[in-house]
Image 1 (spheres, rainbow, N blue to C red):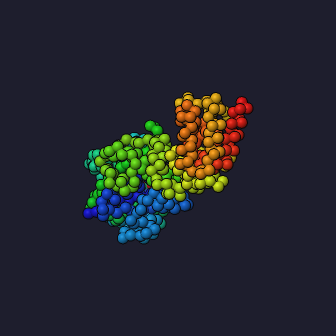
Image 2 (image 1 turned 180 degrees about the vertical axis):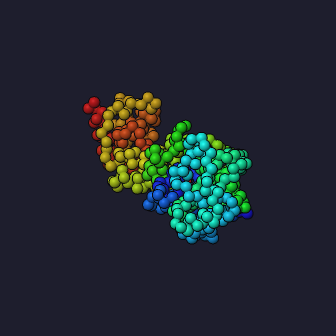
Image 3 (image 1 turned 120 degrees about the horizontal axis):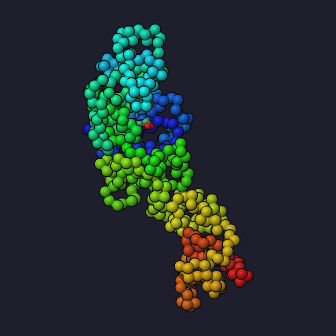
Length: 485
Ligand code: GLU
């Protein structure tokens, strides 16, 4: 039987990083099997929490990341519809809930919401210490149906055996065993006729043939209740892969509500979808080798559920930035130019060779948003202080610059063929002539024509891009500034 996994987000706003990682892992698990199927299912039964546009965010994010689903609301498939609210309309959940009542796994309940909340609290340990026994369990089905026919509001609740234990083996958290007495008789169908997540997930995962349920570990403690439903129907249970949380720090989960970055925020900050996927794949999963950079296909090959850890993994923006930088530097120059031209153009409006500028930037920028501020010296020559010539490592200072810059100017003024190679050849003759180190010539020159302590590209690259006239103009201004000190 081939693997079928699903990503089942609720359209309640942004794409959280934790959610995206769950989607990615579900994708990888499916795709490891050549016949594997990755499904997108929209879980929108909690109508109060829906946010307009959130479904589009889900589609867009998955498309940008290359997490292509094989079945889903937009492309259909053999076990649709793939949106839960559409499934509600067909009456499917109600039908299964009634079947479950007949099988003894559920019952009609006429308690008010307060009573139900109290019963739940008793089971989660938050309420008074009493064992709530739902009196509605003892109403006969015929009587219950009469009350419903008379218009009385009702919900359908799960019936949990009073005794015994329920157990299962989670792929990440191992053997889990609970006493049935601690499981609450959760609501399966709400008074508005909509199923709760707790019911819909079981019905849908079964009807959609899901073999591997990949989801956040907040569902781990409810899974025994879901398994009781599978058992009542006599259905095969899926494998469970509960994922440890993605953390902001040791104490709190990463969450948009606390102002932590969503996927959209990361894109706006100039990260690449490929790099984000690469980084988040490893939040809680460790590959067997030290390889750091993975394409999606490489992740499919390397991923192994056995190496998912139980501990929450901290999302480290610094590490993400460095992975992003590796991705950017690994691109071929033409793709890099295409990607970065809009960012370069934010800073460089003048008539300069964008490809050459990009080549310099590629060695330096770790995110796309770092690019414009690095390039603000092309259009306008910034004011700067002669202190910039002071650099211990390069053994330069304003006095050294005073010696070397006029020599550079003389050499540059003679060049008629303003190419990288000629500039390089002619400038590199200078250090020996002046009895200086290379850095003592090139570092001051770079400062003198850029006015910046650091730049993408060195003196030769910048001079080449600026052109002869502009290079000499800046050099003259800088020499005058040194002399006027
Ligand atoms: N709709 C649930 C959520 O967004 C999905 C949980 C699951 O994957 O079963 O948390």
